[in-house]
Amino acid sequence: MSELLLVGGTVVDASGERVADVLVRDGVIAAVGTRLSAARTLDAGGCVVAPGLVDLHVHLREPGDEEAETIDSGARAAALGGFTAVVAMPNTTPPLDDASVVSSVLARGADAMCEVVSSGCITKGREGKELAPMGELYALGVRVFTDDGACVDDPAVMRHALEYSMSLPGAVVAQHAEDSSLAGGGHMHEGAWSSRLGIPGRPAEAESVIVARDIQLAALTGARVHFLHVSTAAAVDLVREAKRRGLPVTAEAAPHHFALTDECCAGFDPIYKVHPPLRTASDVDAIKAGLADGTIDAIATDHAPHAPEAKERPFDQAPPGMLGLETALALTLTELVEPGALTMRQALAALSWQPALIAGIADRHGGPIEAGRAANLCVIDPAAAWEVDANRLASRARNTPYAGRKLTGKVRHTILRGEAVVIDGTATR
Ligand SMILES: [Zn+2]
Image (cartoon, rainbow, N blue to C red; front, side, top):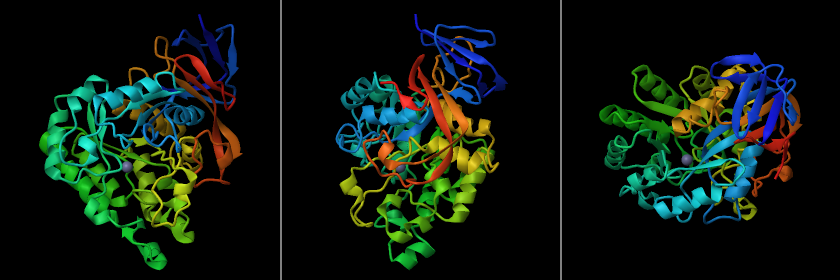
């Protein structure tokens, strides 16, 4: 029998908040209350005890690019970031378009430091032409289907995928909304900064035309659509209107799309290159407003590790993407909660229970924190101030754009299936 008592924290979940101790026994929450005792205790004084965070969007790079990240190293970074579940994106080599590849990712993730949920491709080879064997992948537990890294450009293929997903209860088609022909050849947001720097741009419309189109396809088919890493004010407006009409659409935003702008590219440092690109200050304001009013359901990292030599290439040759797992919570607290744009509970909704629902894992992640539920939890010290040190990240890669940035709020403990995998900010295995 394993037993653990989280003492003196404020328990926050979808149902509210209260000061209480949380007793964990054999992987399950045994009791929430006062005057509990256990053989082993972890201090949670001054901290928030929340359901473990859930990241809808991570690139673990395995199989194929283990130099940048592995399932193990990515899951370790996730646990240190407070995540108890991550959805692995399918743009590996080979891609996750085949039952044997998905099975091997799930097997590799089985004893990782967070639950590794596999996405599956929408189309074979992520080529946007022929549907992947979605039914076979679904049978393995896949619920999130995406060609992430690539947009499903062909509307007929997207319609076909949505229609097929209707036969798979709980499945969702997640779109990387960037029209390939409009965004192609661009390396940053198309606007005043791209003109000044002479870097070819990716216009905001590359995102909004696909979001507008796929909202119409959701209405046509009745199928769920999830928009990955929404980055523009226009896309936020479209999703808000679609939700007002009652359409089954959800959206996520990445921390870099509320914490950074295209001006960051002024020094030609490819650390700031990402798809979709960093946008303008008014887009950042729209992302914040979308999170505040619930238009954007989730904060997802788009954690995208790259080996150092790849990110040392010139801006136009470097691969897009940046690390996110170990800084997402602190960026959310520092950029959104501290200034009053979101409450702590809204932030945790976007980082935990709402993404758990979208990913189809709400039976075991995202709370509520009550007896009988799986003990996937994180304990957050909201007042801890720290500075990001790229050399102290658990990720194999070093491509964080936040090195040297001072943040407030830190993960203290992470509990996975009842086991403390992070204690006082340190991984236990
Ligand atoms: Zn993407």
